Image (tube, rainbow, N blue to C red):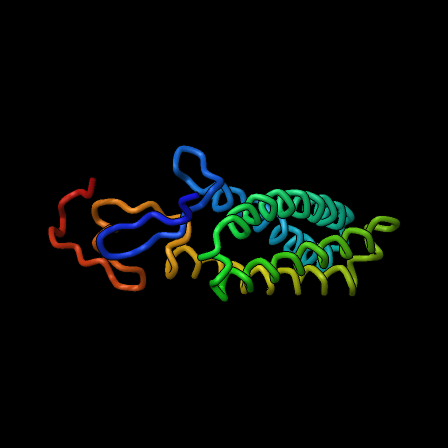
Length: 179
């Protein structure tokens, strides 16, 4: 099985879950990030306004974030476990383990709110949402490192083929559109 795309200058770890060449994990992660960030914002607004709507919004955003995160994790796991090069990257392990921890925290947050959505927001719900938000920042950073530093899932193009990971691309024809 071909785990990497090789060019004259560098190797690109392949994603095994793609649609028209685009890694599916990179498409899916945006949803749980938005939902879980929205849950934190909703918790803060509830704390300020005490309006039940915001507590309910946070609860449903947490559920959507858990479901979306589980789907993104399943797809990301296919790439992680099917490619030894990806598994050799420290950033990949930190990204995966951190996101698994996030899913457990979100599940605990949902279960804590199940019987009384409003009562669970302060203080434990908002604390769990804040921890989730902070961990999302860290795991997102590692996910970005996988793409931008290690070129995981990046398809080489005529411009990118000649550009090793980590080096700045110099525009040799400024002002001209790139193809």
